[in-house]
Length: 284
Image (tube, rainbow, N blue to C red; front, side, top):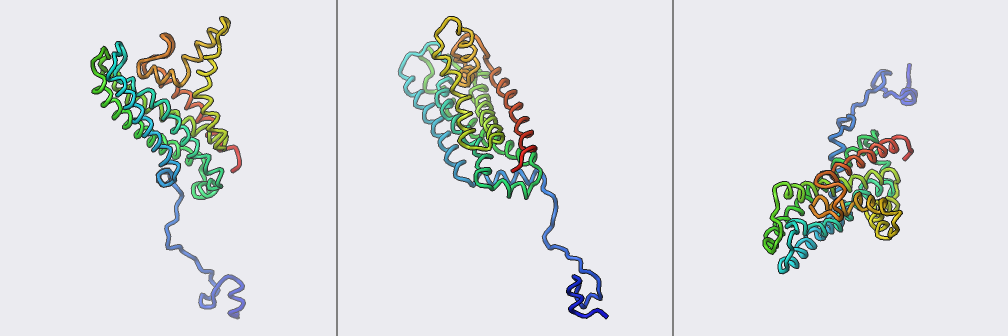
């Protein structure tokens, strides 16, 4: 006969007649899906302070500088200047905020150790990175496009006339959707770099180098032997790519129209492939 003490020691209760108890949790238990990862990343990105500050500064800079440039140009002759190109200056500076947020979306979790909690809830590292990329890209694209649309609408009304070129449908598309895609892709590239480096300061510094260093180096290349390299650095620099999308490239040669966007898309795809490879091979 089994005594109550023996039954307890064997993991059963006396009233169960020696049969082990089957525990059923009242909380449904299932594997995390991609939809769960998306909801989790959306909750994180909209509740942290870095999102509010970086995107708030981006909107302020893009809209503020864009309208300021348009107001200054409205009283001057600007023959041959595209009407929507006044938004270039604000977008160039505002893109730095999007780059910073792209890095922080993933590197901040490594610096605080929260990445362990994230990967415990969703063990698939590729799913986590993909969810971060989708949520961040969507948010950056929508906000940048809305800001550029507002600036373009005001610019076209403020600086019409005075020899300014009236925007065509293609120019409207590039100055709004095209710029929104380009800036969002820059941020996505920064996210991929942050995933590979896992260090906020290092990744932000690397991205600032990608954006600014080629053009700065080209400015100091005055020798005849460096002319070809100087031209290439200018043509494929980020500032010139943004200017080309707006229709005011720094050089007559090099990518024009939508081409800079496709080039950045290819570079971003390669960087994301490296990020997915690295995040699955390294320990947390």
